[in-house]
Image 1 (cartoon, rainbow, N blue to C red):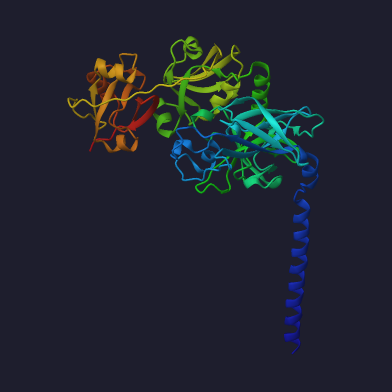
Image 2 (cartoon, one colour):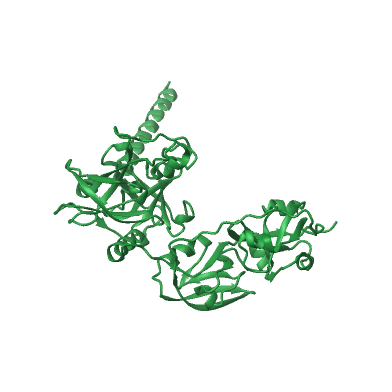
Length: 477
């Protein structure tokens, strides 16, 4: 009987200890969690709701090209999404923004106001003010608005360069039109490249803060109440929040704002190279000691890089003293550099680091190249790669806009390694390793010079894009 009572008492004591420990842990955990109420009360009034309206195009027939850009940011360009309309048939776009000066300058996303005829800003005190679009920049996805008012509440602006993964951040905005909704989370990563080619100059801040339609253009605060980013996009298959959100660093946005105020547009630096990542096969084929850097697959004639001596096949390791870990690191650094700035480019070439001084050029406002190529039935025999190629005729060169004499066209793929490397019929192979090829004979000779078991680097042009592809040479037997 005594033993039984002792056992019962021991169990109760254990339960009591566990209960106390749980209470203490809960109390400690609650104490460690941040309290956002002071931040929201102080800076929430500087966050606004932005509504943009515009008349639909006369050609509006309901196809995907007429889907408002604000929906494409969340659903993707091909998803079936609703078209918000006003009572008069107007298209309506709703987003968020924040006041950056007491005299009425408001910052939001370009895709919130893109194509709008009228823009209004709703304040927390229920005032609705007409807004003028001072200027926009599609590549940074920034729009600067101006309302006629004074003594407006303003946000405090922070430094996005010191943002680190794991830090708490807070978003205030109007998801689905619910004004001044507050959500919180942490920074998941910094320097992310996300979005289309038009936003390669934005090193996004990735967060797990719940962001939905209507949050676009709203501020992302740190715990000091400073804006470190502008909520812009989410990664989603459904159009709703799935744990991955992206914000434009405030430093990038303010750089655009100052240029818009001064010149009316945003200019970016350019050095004139097309680049790609260095993967394991690339590194092996180039004889690099490690994976990293940006592999140059095209140099624009007459550009800053061309004048500095940059060559196709170089691997860019640093720009202006900043290390380049991946190809995504380079465009934001170059783009944010003022044209005319002198900078050093360090590249790896033939196993050696080479420093190339250059002067940063200016990115043209518009540039586009379209190309296509048909196949010639008369082609060379397959080689060790299992790749059949043919010479390119003068008419084909003219058709694809190929302004050099280099290149052979791929007509057939039989090698498994070449197929895995995503080589395809219609591709134009410009170089094998560092050697330009002008004919079938030159191509086959260059490939024959690669030892079985090694990888060969092929500089491939597909439509208007050029990139290196590493293809292993199969071992015999």
